[in-house]
Image 1 (cartoon, helix red, strand yellow):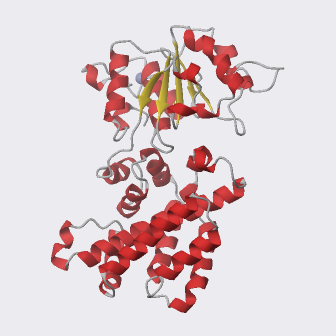
Image 2: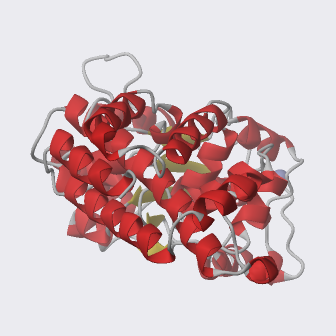
Image 3: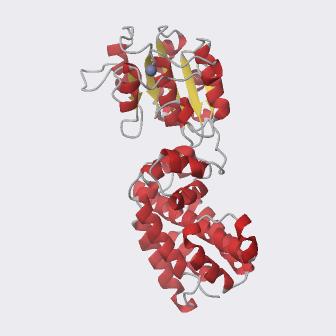
Length: 377
Ligand SMILES: [Zn+2]
């Protein structure tokens, strides 16, 4: 579903786009700005589909949306709309030949081949540049003229994590729409109702996604994510009762387990886009840090549950939000075996480890120090 009505938690952005569409005041270029995984792709697709739709929902104007059923919408939904063209980086960068024909390069010149012709399937031609921060300088400069005076039927939608990552000349020709992290409450239910994911996975994804709906939805749709989560939580359950002498072994297990994390970092481009990661380390090193970070995030959710379980007495449990509610019996047993302050210490240690990981600290050292705190005191 690529309609505004199926977008969760971006009410101000959706309202602004609906107003522009309803009053037929679309600018030639939108720049969607927001953290990786926040849902820029879904917003771009919904906007493209609505802009092209042959019989949009226009009443009331505040609910403006694509119809979802016309021939243009059906093609847009299927990702086969020839008049909605999406540009992704070719390698590391989005390059000039992707827009304009160069040396008869195959697949080149999507703009030069189409821009001059009025649309025949939908109401507009839409060009989506999904990672505008990767535009080379020459590619960005080559867009300036068309962004300045686009044909009336053309709509450009650029997306980038930060406004500062886009050339000022592009930025000044675009209308910026900001996407924000969406509230956690509700995301869980949204995931259950829009994806085939079970309530337990939805609860965990809502918690670890930190309001990045796009990331949560991608995870919820990935068939392998459930297995990976299960494997990590089973590991988490063994930690509190592991004897201290096994701490180094546990750290090693943690690193091995992280290597198996694939789906959980699957299509999340944050590491590649994060400026902090820009310099040091090879791509492999970056990937292994992202894998470990994903594992830490799940452990944090687990320890948050332990804190919640040990702080509340059983009669109050109805009011406490437990993320891993399907593991409640085990959580309660573990929680009762130690004090809330121990679980808080573990949670602190995980937070510190997560930060050190982002700051490029040595992975072996980070996991070893962490394991010393997580095992039996
Ligand atoms: Zn339609």
